[in-house]
Amino acid sequence: MSITTSSHAVVGTPLRPLRRGRDNCILGGVCGGFATRLGIKERNIRVIFALLTLVFGLGIVLYMTFWLVLTRSGEEHSIIQQIFMNRREAQIVLVAFIATLILIITLQTTGTHVSDGFGWPLLLSGFAAFAVWRGASVDERLRLTDFFNTAPVIGGAFSKSRKGVVLRVLVGAALVWFGLDQLNHLGGVWGSAGSALLGTAVLVGGVLVLFAPWWLQNVRELTSERRERVRAEERATMVAHLHDSVLQTLTLIERAAANEADVVRLARNQERELRQWLFSPETVTSSSTSFVGLVGAIEHDVENDYGVRVELVTVGDCVPDERVAALIAAGREAAINAAKWSQAMSVSIFTEVEPTSISLFVRDRGVGFDLDAIPADRQGIALSIRQRMSQFGGDAFISTSEGEGTEVQLVMPRSK
Amino acid sequence: MIDSTRPRVFLVDDHELIRAGIRAEIAGSVDIVGEADEVEAAIEIILERTPDVVLLDVHMPDGGGQAVLRAVVEQNTTTRFLALSVSDSSVDVISVIRAGARGYVTKNISGPDLIDAIYRIAAGDVVFSPRLAGFVLDAFSTGSDEQPVVTVDPDLDQLTARERQVLRLIARGYSYKDIARELTISTKTVESHVSSVLRKLQLSSRYQLSHWASERHLN
Image (tube, rainbow over all chains, first blue to last red; front, top):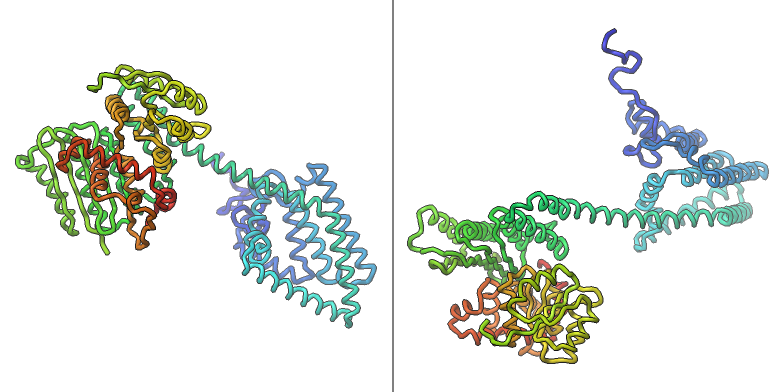
């Protein structure tokens, strides 16, 4: 036997079951499903359905039928199957179906021409839409409500904006006018239009009386479903955050229990992160768009890399520019120096944003050093701090003496 | 710790572990006269035993440290409060100070520093941690915006240049002694500046103090 067993499959395109599309859908995903199955562009399928619609609305009816019969990709059952799996739903839909049939027949026998042409496909599609609504999975229903809520005209029903209301009124009025005009053409006189209107009104009223409770219940279920979903999502974000941060750190602490320095470092790290998350969530997302966020990054890195506690105090905030970047770079250098050389357990950083300048102080109570006798490589560091500052007209001043600790004072004028 | 009479200290915190930790650190240097883990009990026992210093947790159920402060400050003038918290929320910190606490330190303060702070509070001084100094500077900042600050009482609503200087040095991590040397003034003068800042913080009706937290955005 040879290795190949795929002789019966179409070469090139893998065989896919006919399913309604999930990602490539506009309404029910029928066209998308056919496109995937046949390997044709969705647009072509849509055009075919649209053309079929012109033939006595055949396209719509076909579409709705497929919608009901085809299983949505990723789901177990088609909508029809789902309806018949639930006895109550099945009854409701059956009643609706019979009502639709009676309606069509009555209209036909009473000689009203509404059922001619596009009438019956529309009524049938209306029924199908109702069935879809009853039988669709929660996920699909949510997608549909989202779709209708964002649709330009219908969606306006939920928005209170003046624009939406005006648009809806205009479209509604145009439709009513168009309808009346059509009826007049059919009947010739206002009288027949009037009686047809009355009939329609009675019909709509009857349908409303019949189905309103179900519909309302549905709406209510849906809103509570959605509320629960939002709540669940919030909880999930919270859980995800706690898991990624606190739980991970606790595990790390357990493992590093023997190493005191590691435990302290981990705990501090976690404490800082949690604090930031609790009290200033905006800087978490925008650490690069705020001065305080950038200083916080220095705190984080120094505590992490050198195991030294950083006591950070900030007053005021501003949007960073190149001057701020230079100040931050110099401040980082100073903080790392303090952590590396001072032998102090903690380093204080204080920043203040004032209308005309930004100052940044890095202080330690460590061993200090003799400014005149610093080795060449550290002079280089001092120079790099000074140079960064003077480039934008800022000042750097270092005060230190042996045994007294060190303070680096940086002042940068703000750009206008 | 030259003080011959050890201050009588009362602990209020709803976490057993935290109380145990604090107790272990300070028991050798002060007299702990009681503990409470809830607001109501704390108020009652503090009023009954009138300790010198209450170490007060900011966050507790039923109103937190603020509720204790309000109830006790109404009745009693000799007990002083030091707020102790893990919280860094500036609103919380400023609120307990305005409710009558004489100082604020974070719970990760070292044992000796905490004991030092308790003694200073007991002696009538004010204890500002660097972070609190930062919050206060922020609260009293004239703001970088053009809008002028509406001040009701300029004496209370603004910090003097000297007070600002002192606060900045505290925020930079200077001790009172360092500050005194830096500004060539006496430690007592430093303390009086800080006390005056505390008074302003508690009495000022400045609009910003109540609302500044929400305005603390980037401009």
